[in-house]
Length: 314
Image 1 (cartoon, rainbow, N blue to C red):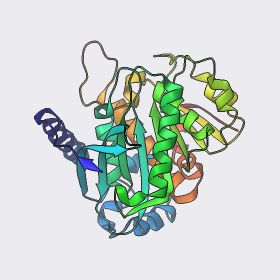
Image 2: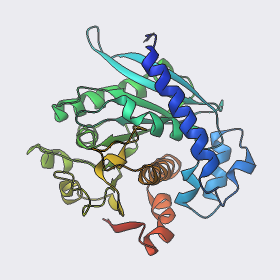
Image 3: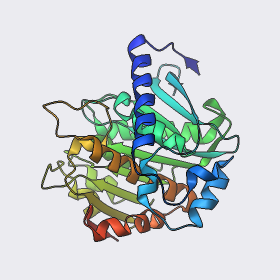
């Protein structure tokens, strides 16, 4: 695996991401569970502590207890002629820990998930933000994603020896969510998938969705604010083991975290932080238990006050 020197713009972006993590870590409501006071030395210690206390999605709004090392623009060698660009975020603990792989949607890039990836790593889960063709075809991207997962599952040391190859979690935003569903359908060696306001325009997706046999959680935007194309098909066609919940007032763009909001975007900092907290709870739940029950329980009080809405599962 070859490391390509990051350009100045990427370095600046990383510094900005770190600054935002520090700012949000200091300003957001502190966790009620005392994780920051615990100062765990390993992911296993953090895992044991969280599972022994009441699940609370809000504790994941702030950065976790671990430092993170970032490696930009790694080249993953799928074959002699195929190279995949990715950014790798490694949590500090020395023990083995899960790997979360994030895939962007249409017109976006791995940079749009830099904050999410870094946030996950502060909670002890190594993260890899991929760069695949951002205008599709999304079924082909899904097959490529499955090959990447299988490569890492066979040779996790190519990224880092601390990666637990039995706990690889796939995350996709928008059309990237469709690619995650395809990857799971064709047998990617992953624990399951988290779909961030997924979308699809491919008539072939139902055929793939019916073959998904791993746990899937759809974290959606508020469909009264923005409606992702074909989002309902994921819950409709995945036969079982799927849950879905939406964030009140959130827009489609809130399901990523590009750090920049403009006049043409409906994204807000508050909703993006809500998305990243729900994503972290879901990734931890799947990594620790192989299911989304912990994450679902963590949404409990927020569904009562209607911050999370329209929960359903089968």
